Length: 151
Figure 1 (cartoon, one colour):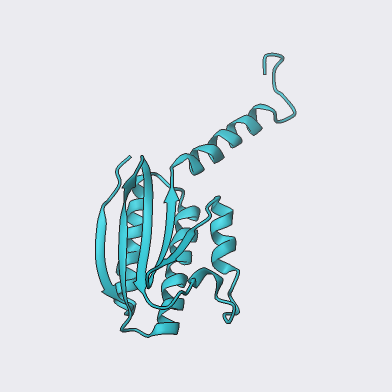
Figure 2: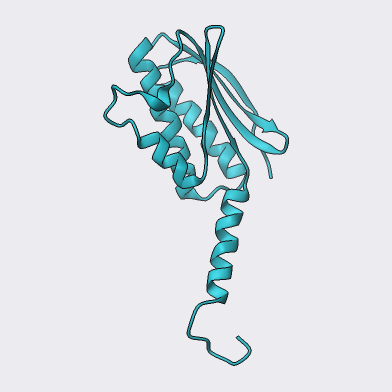
């Protein structure tokens, strides 16, 4: 399991958001996350950054971190402003998009606001995909009909 470390502060310009999204994908590939789950996570993070930009402007600086903590991949986004959770933007018609995408992967992001700093954090382990693989193997073992008596 190779985890890419990334620390950068950037403004919410399209190219910077795209670059961050590519780094997230690279980190998720490093822990062998299934493509479908990588896309869900990337879309959720991109949507969060776009919501922050819509509210505070393209000049808003965001500090992004991708790394390892206690054996888990951690993705963290921080920005200074009044308390604002981009995952529960009630004014946005896509309010449940991020939540449903991340729930499908089995993740629940943490949002923290303290001393003028907002933080959104995801902790992932490659067990999400391993659990899916194990479930599929067990399901296949119990599938009917069986070809032989031993099966």
